[in-house]
Length: 58
Image 1: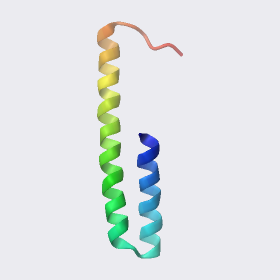
Image 2 (image 1 turned 180 degrees about the horizontal axis):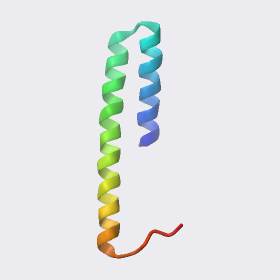
Image 3 (image 1 turned 120 degrees about the horizontal axis):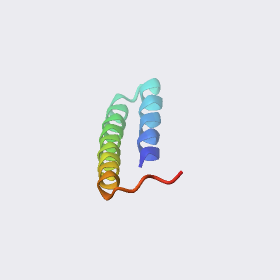
Image 4 (image 1 turned 90 degrees about the horizontal axis):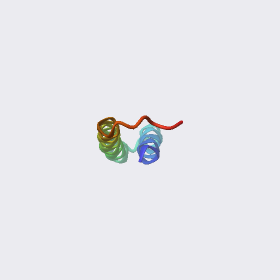
């Protein structure tokens, strides 16, 4: 999911450089939404792991 956010971020940067403001804004908005979903799922995963009492295996 983080890969998708980075992809949309790069698309937004390239579109902004080329002057496509509408596409750049849309891609940046999508990237922000996907990144926030990633962060929320990461926090939920970390809390669930902590509540289970198991330490992460490296």
